[in-house]
Length: 246
Image (spheres, helix red, strand yellow):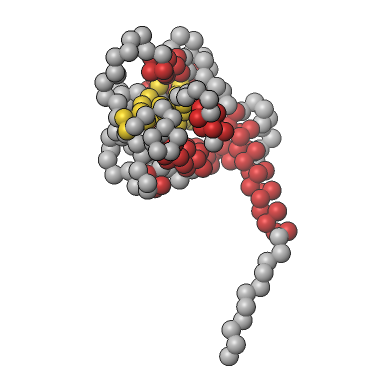
C-alpha cells in the first residue's frame, strides 16, 4: 500500500511487482495453461500456502489501483516461476528447498533421491529471468510486446520455462553429475518421498552432525518448531463448553 501511495503522489509513476505463478496453481485453477491476464476473484485459484495467498491478494489490490476512476497507476505484474541456478555460474541459493534436497540426497549417510512420478520441472535460471524482466521493464523500442493482456494500465507477464522436463530426466542428470560421481560409489537409490523422509528421520535420531547434512539441519529445526508450537498450545487455558440445560 505504501508503494501504491508513493506511485500516486506527485508525478504519476508506474509499479512493477514480482508476483508468483503459484497464484494460479490452486485447486480453483481449471485450465492447465495459465493466461497472461488479470487473476479472478476466487482465491482458490492460488495455492493454499501463505506465500501464494499473499501474492494473490496483492494482484487483486493492484487490479483495482490501476483503474482510471481509482488511482490510475500503470502496473506491470511479473508472475515468476521457480528460479534455479545461473546458466553462467550454476550458483543457486543453498538455503532453498531443492539445493538442500540434492545435497542431502548425495550425502554418504543418505545416498538416496526422492522420486516424483508426476512432477514436471519448469524452473527458469535466475539470469534468464533477470534478462526477461529487463526486456519487459526497459524495452529497446516503444513497440507493444506481443501476447500481453492489458486492462487499463495493467499488464501481466508469466515468467516461466516454456519447455518443462520430467522429474525422472532431472534425476538422470543428477545421477551422472559430479555431485554423485565424486563419491566414487554406485548411483543414488531412487525412493519415494515418504521413504526419503523416513531415512532422514532415522539419521536425525542418530548422532549425526546436523551442520554436516543440509536437510538434517532443516529437519531438526522443523521438529524443534513443531515441539515449541505444541508446548505453547498446552499452556493456553481451554474454555469449557457450555452445558445444555435439560
